[in-house]
Length: 164
Ligand SMILES: Nc1c(C(=O)O)ncn1[C@@H]1O[C@H](COP(=O)(O)O)[C@@H](O)[C@H]1O
Image 1 (cartoon, rainbow, N blue to C red):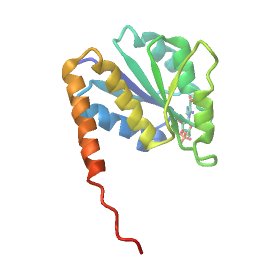
Image 2: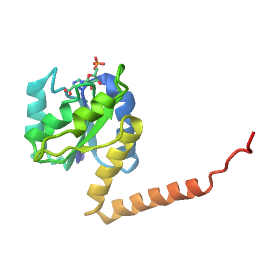
Image 3: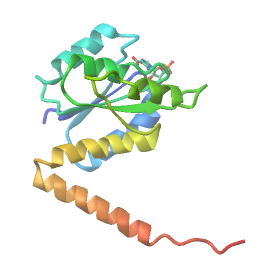
């Protein structure tokens, strides 16, 4: 079995509806990945172990999704130099604005690349991870270029309904 290049973690299984969109993209591009629940709040020792072992396990990036007081991406970034891509998950009461602010407002020196709230952010985090890997992998770069070309063709083919 190929060891994962991208780790996908989330604070709770309730984040899966959002984070599965990252996993779908990684699967589509054939990027070896592994997804699991890791919570800075509820399982801090596991979170530390995950971050501390990330480099040695060969992870090239970690996509971390969390909602509300979303400390997971930032705490991972505090414990590893493997790039962390943060995905704010929509929360029940504040619709994910709390998650976004928690993830994006990192202190200088400990960056988390922060994406949009929800499914689009999760998909874009995965596409960004693919782009990072593609810079050293011509076959993957070709797949990414084909994906973008398909997207452009679909946008050009968009038709609008007649005005009411
Ligand atoms: N933000 C975090 C962290 C963390 O950052 O460590 N751990 C869990 N959570 C978030 O709590 C929300 C509610 O979780 P539950 O649905 O399990 O109550 C989830 O969006 C999760 O990401």
